[in-house]
Amino acid sequence: MTLRRTLHNVILLAALAGLLSSCGLRRHKYDNPIAKDTQQPDKVLFDKAINDIEHSRFEIARLTLQTMINTYDTSEYLAKAKLAIADSWYREGGAHGLAQAEAEYKDFILFYPTMEEAAEAQEKVCDIHYRQMEKADRDPMHAIRAEDECRQLLVQFPNSKFAPETEQKLRNVQEVLAAHEYATAVFYHHKGSYPAAANRLTGMVGQYPLFSQADEALWMLGDSYSRMGDRFEDRAAAAYARIVKDYPLSAHVDAAKEKLVALGKPVPEADPVAYARMKYEMENRNGTNLIGHIWSAFKKSPDTSLAAKSGTPAMTGLRPTIPASVPQPQGAATGVGSDVTVSTVADSKELDNRPDARMNPPAPDSAGTAAPAANQTAKPGDPAPGAQPFATNHPFKPKKQKKSKKKSEKQAEPAAQQTQEQPQPQQPQK
Image 1 (cartoon, one colour):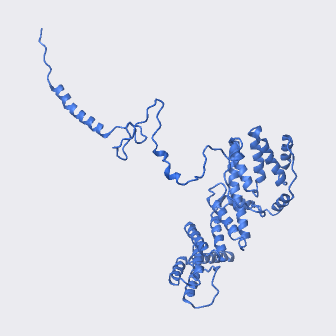
Image 2: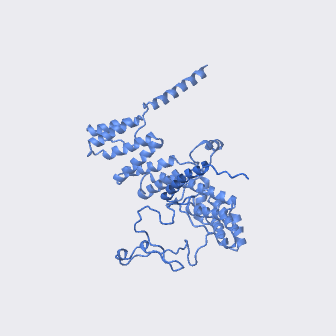
Image 3: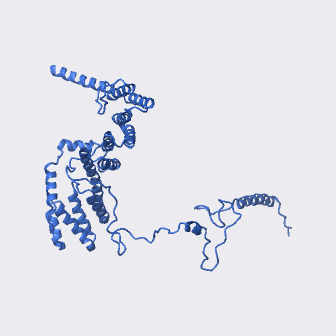
């Protein structure tokens, strides 16, 4: 009886706490208050808005802050007010709220790039897309945006206190993006499209060397090149050699060495820096238990427990590469050749003096007759003689011909009726 009453009280307290938080009575402390103790009217409005934000009255707080900005446009707390508006949208959450928060944070960074809070605003923009990031087998839009925004913080604010945490977020994001590319490459490899698989794997292992399954990707890359023919043996050997050198604790090291010996290629030595990094990752990797593995199937966010904890993340975006199976012109190391050339004009007057190529008359055909000149009396929009204005399944017929045809048909109908109504002459009987 006592246990049942205790459980009943706990449930009531939990329900009451949820009701209070939903009604805005629970306080969530604001991170950037103004510590200055003064009774200036702009400071009073700012404190009132912050109190509303802490109690989840976001719309009222934004109205108060906007009133302060419009009334006291030279206030010393103007930047703080703009940041508070962005924070109110960020705390409100939801797709609409986070989109508004990102726009407000971007405006704050644009107008106040030298303030200390600018790095925090950029960190919030990174976190907005990081929170909306989905699993590797789904749309990677938010993961790509999170990678761009986190990289922007490290480039623009490298000495910020948010830099170490953002760097780890960037490793987590790149783990998800690499897993997305790896899953696509596995599909192509199992399907038998080895050039497509090799193209995906080449770009992925070159862009994301900290990927937890980079050694598996290199092994599949070497296998893809081996199945594409003898002229790709060097590329396959390079993939196997990279496993031995950059991933010395991989399970494919011994098999990669055997492949290199069979191909007649030298076996490289293991990189000590790579060995130390891989050992550190294996010792500090946080695996998920059985319950977490089951629960991850119902979660929208990806599992980043296997992401790297050390190493410098890639600071450039992933760009598509040209597949190795595409033939290249002679003398070209990379890229695809083209007959189109571009050159600068020495004299800019030539652009005005030379005639336009579109205005030149057409050249004569093989019979020596020139094309008919354009009709000078034709109106704009009229079809050319003997040409159809648009692609259609029906031949082009002028409207006048259709009307004349209809008139001739109407005139022919009464004549046909008269010939049918006239009695035929009887023949004399013999």
